[in-house]
Image 1 (cartoon, rainbow, N blue to C red):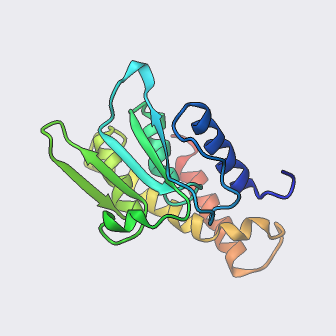
Image 2: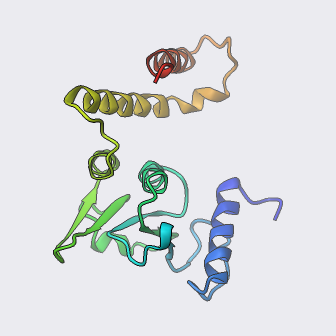
Length: 185
């Protein structure tokens, strides 16, 4: 529908794709606060049949997006468990909030990791994205921390380029410094 926000269009498409794949048997949600069962999308690249990771987050982009992208880029099998209005995650989430990464270890044990930064750092090490030396690892961590500063000022993207607001100036500075740092990488 024309009056749906971009996030709702994505949520509806995901719900319809999951229904078409036989993952759910209900109508797509009308809003993110709709009563709707969680959706599980199984990512199985290269013929993988199982996954050691389950990423639990809301059916939207946000703090769960970077861990999801890390798993996708590295072609790591995982289950994306997406929630709408349900609060069932509060029963297993260490701090009662998401994102949460459920790690199923090969020895049969499991772990539940919370806090987006902790999940990103864990996955970067586990997936070989954290650098090959202490210096590279520190650079990766520095860029990650810098990206959080940029995300904190993302609303300033909509301000005019010549805007003198403090947020717009800081965003411009973060982006320029990041580009200078990463431009040759």
